Image (cartoon, rainbow, N blue to C red):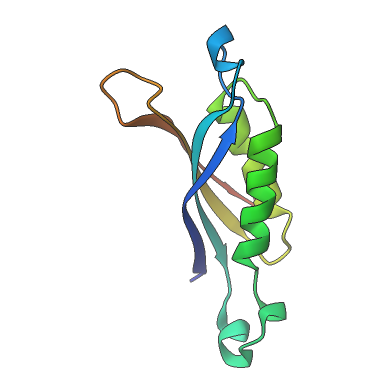
Length: 119
């Protein structure tokens, strides 16, 4: 059994999309992340060094999303998953990347991917 650290509704503003108008100015990108790891040691020690800092992860994801200029949410999600798996303690990650307002009559569209050290 693995524990979870989650980041919910992280809002980035970046260039993403294949249409010319999507490449002109940053648009909102919504990111949700679940990091799977063992939190027992951190729970016992109460020491930040024994866990994955969600603040550090959030900063890295924001920086990447706001500077990447990807064409697809699929590619951005893959990038973000690799960043998360770069933390040694993270064994698995579920990433959801959404583009609010990208499709008429839909609140948002996007993808959700799951990646682990085994895949």
